[in-house]
Image (cartoon, rainbow, N blue to C red; front, side):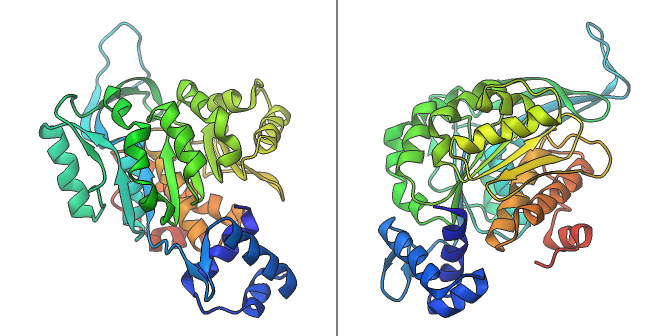
Length: 361
């Protein structure tokens, strides 16, 4: 689905009785061009017949990790090989669960597909999802593996320096399991995935899913799983190290950052968001490329902030906003998250984003 097709599809979903003339006026194109886009959407299976009967996406589906986060932040600069005074916290986490949590705070309907064990940690995740209104009914529950744990050490500014993740349970999110969820996925407004799930499952999902796919690279090694299916992705979110994997070049300066984004676009991704080490976000699509600075030089890619950024751009997409506006919402959401103590800040909400971005939602 192209950017224009995605835009038109959203308008049709929100108002199935909208005319081609109205669609053309909204998009600033000729009626005949709108008709071509509608025809393409019908051929691709997004529109099922006359009267603009769509596949009815009223929710976003997240596929990825849900785990327990255990982390430590020192009071001063980290001293290697020594005990560092600071604070240790335990909370619910996982990229997929965090994105789902943030989206619920922003009022978006969410279904979460993950894998959890049969233990006290799983019960904590289930109870939290029920309280937040996250539909977790389609997740895999097994007694053969423990619910995952993510252990991290941050620096005194909150940026993650070291981490260990025990994610073996996600190997059970097999092609066979995901194939049983394809009807649900194809009826989603969009699908957001993180790369903690198996590479084969990601490949199958991206080949079969008709909904726009937003992908979080998660880590340098896991980013490799996206290489075979970049042409199937509507959005890719990555830090510099992950973008180097996806582009195949070393990012040293602004020019190489721009070239990396160009290469990822050439591989078929529609929209690219890269977090430079110096802060902000580099945004690229076929129509434009630009660096959007955050307040200060804070890194977006710290514990939970990148997941909040993803939630912000998902909300922007649902509201038919431009890439620049989507990125502004993402940066604002990330900034709010960094102000809290955990991977998700309960203070995140639509009014807070409007106040910080001056974008009408």
